Length: 586
Image: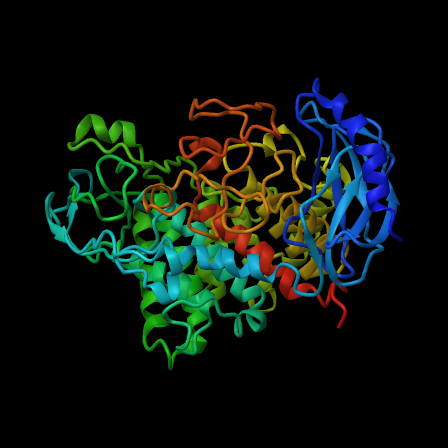
């Protein structure tokens, strides 16, 4: 069929002239990376005033390969937008296409094929390499974004808040490596905990897939999966943050105040390790126990690492037993000690979830029943989407994964039922119906880091699939990945360096200061956040539209390792499961 040019000429201009009064212009929002051959394929038509149908055309615009009817228009619950759904799941011919909607025009080009999201899935993992501290990023691995090592962190001061008799204030310690936490140049144990744990869980859930996945990092030929090499770069830093004299773990390695928008290592301000805390120590214990379990099978490549990590985990647990509720309260600390520390606090004063996660990992790794009582005491806490301050679900995922190896009094079957009920509720609620995603269970989904909410909801759904083998959970998880990659009310693909309209100006010091037009690739922006705590000017301020692609808009446009990690899990899980889900034609 060669209808496209005729329809364009007859129908495009009259409708376009009617759109001036709308809060947002009309548009076609798609997954800008593409669609699997047999997977659900949905686009969302925003603020369409007349069209009732849509057309899929070849990228050269010579042929119409599919036509469909738009769904009835609906009002979004989270903005002034009105939408129609264009469902072209039935188009299963691999190729490169565009969508045409009369009166609106053409979508960005997209692909249909097997391994449709491989590039972005690998790119999200590679994003962690660009966040590495204390090592130069060489051009053969980093491309345009190669740079010197940044902060060496080999001469870090013990802050007065962290002083002990064995390590008085001003003691110099070495704590190199790890990842820069977000758009800033500091390193935080609490946020590293959930980020590293999520990458390690991705490997445990899909080890066969990751065993052959490479993302061009210096360690790619060492016979250890690249995702583990990346996680271990941070694990080795975390090990240096444990006080060898008592087992407690410092909250962070940081400047006293944030660096300006400069390249890493340009400033030479003192760096400090700051006050130990229960949350940091238990997050550390969980990560070390999980690392010990995973690396045991790589003992030839990583001699002694598994044993060292387990000893560190048990030592941290012992410290936490003596300090069961020591909160990191930065404001209170600054009233007592100098220099004042004004970088990210990651303060948390409820520790039940950290106790649970650490106990689950230690129990799964050691089978030592001393941890079972802590697990059982909290095993009925409701499922919630994890965040740095709420890590209960990470423990549940581990119990489900390791269920057959656990003591018989751990109610694994009950946890399975509760996870499936949680996942079913998300699906039944329908999320953001106007954009056909699971994200949007309520307005509370659109918070600081809303894209990580989408990714973590996806992880919960993937885990529901792993215990049930019901494909509906993968379909639901894919809808949230579609959101991240462009099928959303902002029209942005939120992963730098990917898609036709992606985040270009993230709150990320290296991207701002490196003199390169394109941002560092593979980093996921936080996403719509009507809280707008950065107080920059937002063109749109409703829950699903409150996004500002401006480097000053840290409330919606910062990047962070705890956002990238669940995006890595979700995108690579879909890639790993594409054949089992029937998405790809093999």
